[in-house]
Length: 429
Image (cartoon, rainbow, N blue to C red; front, side, top):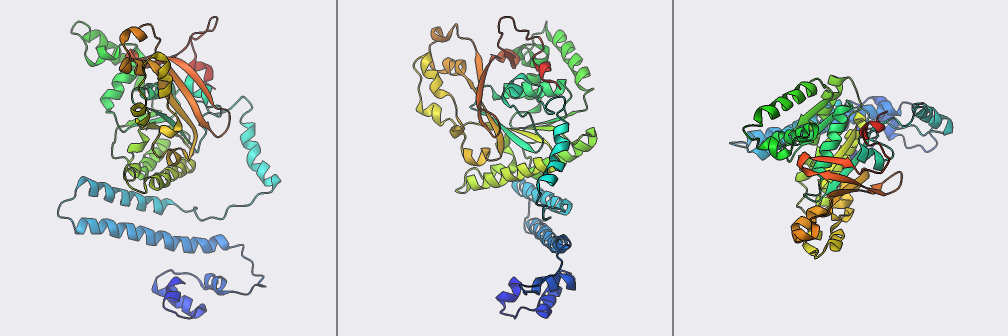
């Protein structure tokens, strides 16, 4: 239609049919009749509108695939030697083409429901809650703060400044999911596989992290034996996958999640992305004038993956250091001024737009060790404060836990008369 308008050709059934033939749309006469009919009193039955959209959408899809493949071919044909960046670009173009080939229902017209239809959709989901809510993190921190649990189709954000404990909180979440055999994928895009395993083993064996990475000669066999025991236990768990792919794209992520779902026979799983900002779809936008817009486009794409695949995603983000540059604490009471907020995430609006909840971590002792004389914090407990600073359903809240850095562990704070022997198990349903 646009082509005809640009060439100032009269718009009618014959000219439209001819143009369809030129661009190989292969639309039927019925489609053309519907499009050219401008009679406002027309009573034609449009019940087959989705069939019409199928034909139009298929052409659009084929054109998009062709454009991406042509772009990939052009890079290959015009380059003497492919750089890593060009290889990644080609890979993303091929991944996007594959996704386009698989998508079929993006254009479907959704039904507008009356209350009867709405309750037909709602009631089966409500009945599933007969024994309580369905979805749990099985972790005392996340289940205490995120009231709705890790619902499928949603994204949550965990953010803090470097050194404030987000990686330790993340490791404890992963361990909780491993222990309770909740299908889980953990992507460590910043730290290596060896470093993450060192931390996980410190948590699980209660061996000091420094002894694992630098074992003494006399303790080596003992430590090796404990690690072998953990290996034997963990390799029995088929509900977990790990990746350290620093060149991960959203298209590749989607394919890997689908494969994992098929492998474990479960649609639902929790995917932890640490750091979310290192996924290639985000990195190419972070320094330009349109960085916020680009990040928002990519986070919307990630949200679509969560909804399409029925999974829950936890994205880990790094706070910027603007607050640390602006605040110099001179005593313990000043440390609270370094506590982060959503605003401390660069391009926060774009990052948290699709996040159903946002958690932040803060450790006063970390900053005390950096800024204050040792005698001022010698008796200070190392507590980590986890705050729910955004939530779509529920109330904002904060909790404290004990931070045990040498074991990469986070423990509930003991309350007199309270049994803490099985805190995480208390949330298992």
